[in-house]
Image (cartoon, rainbow, N blue to C red):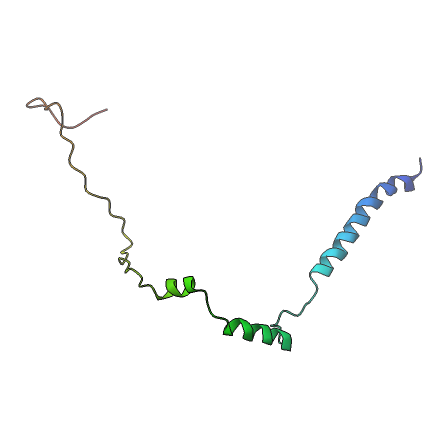
Length: 99
């Protein structure tokens, strides 16, 4: 067995690594991210701005909104009625509980 034959096992992972590095570098390339300022884009924008809104949208916007109660940040539980004891404690019994 030759020593070079053992190194041939490293060829497929090395090729995959090189291809992955090239693909990631191509995905991360510098691209223009600014707004599209072409004439066609400005015409599409103007047409979209001039278009009337659907009546459902204008109805929702013009409807009065209910006033929300201002939150104090404190959780308040509703009050509960006190639970009555079924058995009365014995007279003179100590109310302390011990282990």
